[in-house]
Image (cartoon, rainbow, N blue to C red; front, top):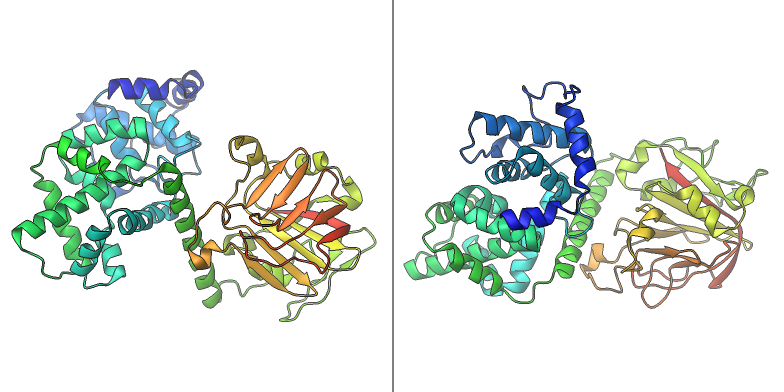
Amino acid sequence: MAEATLKFHSSVGRASSLQRYHRCFVAGDRIEGVHQTLPPYVEPSYLLHYNLNEDGRLAAKKIVCAIGFLCPDITFGPKIYPMVCMFLHYMSEETAYACMMTLLKAKHGRRITQTKMAYESAKMTLITMLKKNATSTYKQLLRICKNNPDTLSNGLDGWLWWMFKDLPFSYMVRIMDVYLCEGTKILYRVAMAICILYIKSRRMSGTFEDSSGNLLATAITQFCNNFTLPVDKLLKTSFGIRGLRRKDLNKMLLRNEMLMRSKQHIGAMRSGAIAMQRRSSLDLNMKVSPSYDRLEVNKAGHLTGQLHLIWHWMPPRITIYEPELIFTTEEHGTSITTFFDKVAGQEPTMILIKTTTNEIFGAYCSTDWEDRRRHEASTYFGTGESFLFSVWPVAKRYSWVGLTTGEMTNLTSMFLAANHSMITVGGGRGYGLYFEQTLDRGRTEACDTFGNPALCEKKDFVCKVLEVYKFA
């Protein structure tokens, strides 16, 4: 554990991280209420102290409160508190804090889930991996749950806590030692190994009666509480699972998170959550109407018209914000450099285009275009929440194909790409939307990422106006 943690926190920018920590607690600028309450991202059901004394528990509380204060974007991180408590058994308070900040800020590997949706996506990913990498075990678990996938999902709700709570502490330490070196993948490996060993134990005892998801959860918890095999056997079984790559894991996590977002969006639309129409700067004279008209270019050059249709295509959380024009070729020119300057730091953005033949289409881009600088090894970036759309003459949204087909290949993951000489939305066997250094001309083709046809009649087009909107 010591070697792994020293190796890990050495790359965190440790000095600046500890300075922020000391500003919170040592220099007198204490976080209000640190001794009375925990931040909301901590799950009260899993306040695992691992026999820390009172000083250790106070140190753990200080660390998680500092994380909550310095990282307000964390909304749900139930395993942060147990990990802090475990670290405090082996290192100082400051070092434990530095290690946690490194794990939380890691660019790759999704080491610690930080939202409720990411947490649920992790469970869906475990089920997907069981189905793909431990097929026999998955079928047996499904049989136990009367072939009901929802019941199986309920039975695996507490999969993380098999390791953090139910297994002996010494086992968890060994698992976390590997976790610090190998990343999140080891947690999925161990969870699958527990399922494999649980099924073997039931087969050996001859107890294969059907049960509900709750009974399955209780049975696996009891199995972990009474675990008699040595930890080496558990880890050997974990690493005996073949065909599991970090790249595939990250793709599964992304796909499942996008599927969940899509279901939420559809559910909100059906429940009328998006029924409220909002006035936006896209059209100062927008009327609430089930129809839509062709957009026109006003005297200032801005696209106007009834854009409530596009508004309905937006993710629900975005519809509570007002769109604000941040770039238009009429005012800022057609330089790609100016485009990147204007859109930097904005997430999400919407690109809206009107051609010289009056065709209107565009793209919703879910990720900050600055991310292009962070992906030197991989040209494409972004998430499956992005989509292409056409407004005139055909009104249609083209969402990520992974939401309907479940496919997560290289061709269907090409969301956004950009550098100093080009911008692309959608890829595969064609560019969904493509611009070179000047934004006055572009090209649109059928692409694998969004399953769209060309967005205009002639694939090559000339822009009458191109605009970018942020939501604030």
